[in-house]
Structure formats: C-alpha cells, structure tokens
Length: 249
Image (cartoon, rainbow, N blue to C red; front, side, top):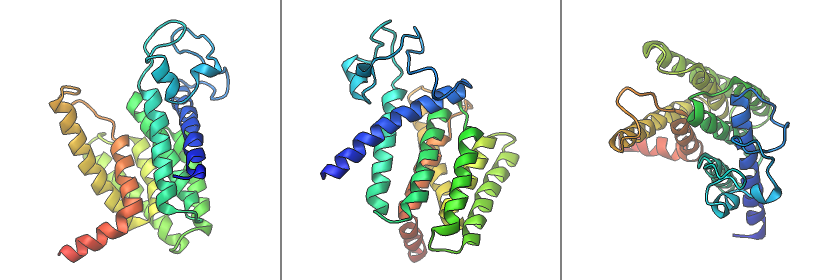
C-alpha cells in the first residue's frame, strides 16, 4: 500500500463521517451544514478530538465525552463502509474515466444504506440529484452507447416497480428510484444480475437475523445493504459472472 493509498483511505474515512451527518440530518429534515457537529443526546458541540473517524469512537469507548451516553456503532460503520467500498472501487476500476460514475453510484449506495438501516428509508433528496449526475456522466462516459444506459435505468426502475406491485408495498419507492440510478450506471444485463445477487444477499441476511433473534418472521428488513452488495459485485465482476453462467450451461 503506497502513500497515495493511505491518503485516499484517510480522506474517505473523513468523507464517511460526513455521510453519517448527511444521512442523520436529512432523515430529521435538518440542515446538513448547520449547526456544527454535536451530540444528538446532550447537544454539546463536538471538539476536534471527538471527530477523528473510527479512532474517536474507540478512544471514547463508544460513549459521548460529555454526557456519557452510548454512541451508535452506525457511526464507525458508516466511516468504514465508505473507506472500504470507495477504496475497493478505486483499486478495482483503476484510474480511468469510468471511475466518475463508479464513485457517484457508490456514494449513492453508501448513503442509501445508512438511511435505510436507520429508518427503512431511501431518500429522494439523495437519489434524484445523483441520478441526474449519473445520466449526465453516461452521456460522455461508457463503453456502450448512451441509449444502452438509459435502457438500463428503465429496466432497473421497471423491475423494482413490478416487485413493489406484486408484493403490495413490500418494496418502497426509494428502492425503485435507486434501481433506476443503478440501471443507468450498469446497463440492463448487469442491473438484472445485481438484483439477483441482492435477493440472494437479502435472503441470507434475513435468515441470519431471524436465527440470531434480531428480527421476527414477517418483520421488515432494510433491503439497502443487500442492494449495495449485489450492485458492487455486479459492477466489478458482473461480466465474469455472466460468462461463467453461460459457460456452465
């Protein structure tokens, strides 16, 4: 791991801390930039020593320095998720123009995971602006013609809309719009693959949560993390998976 890699990880950890703020404050319908970072329990303004990604959480033993209330482990989770996933994309995609839509989509997925885990919501305030950026990026970036990526967006939107209709509300509107963004980035074939992989991940995750008593049968489970897993795998290894599948038959 080189010096640039270390700087990249540090930067993305800080970015992850900001994404935590974005997720929490948008869910509360608060400003992302004001007031400054503070404890959600005692409202005490946080000092610089409280804001080091992951390290502050460990140093403070998961408690607020001022009121001693437990800090949600979702804070370091969001920071680590951001750093690990963006670093993975950076090393897998490499330094190429494709990294622009790759980063935009990954950031959208990260924030969607953070809001979905907290409140079972994927927010239009995040999805729609980044969907717009993805459409613009695909006008200039991509190995396929622009219409191919628009078709991917239509496929992603339609598949999730169909699932929402037949499940009678089992899939939220946020998931549907998120898959439109995924489709615009991946194209139709990899979008379909990402949904298959996300369904497998969701089934395994749901089974694990039921076995460990975290959720009960029939209780809704956030699908955002499964979408994240399925999409990242499809984006980075989807072509190889399709080739293996076709060759297998």
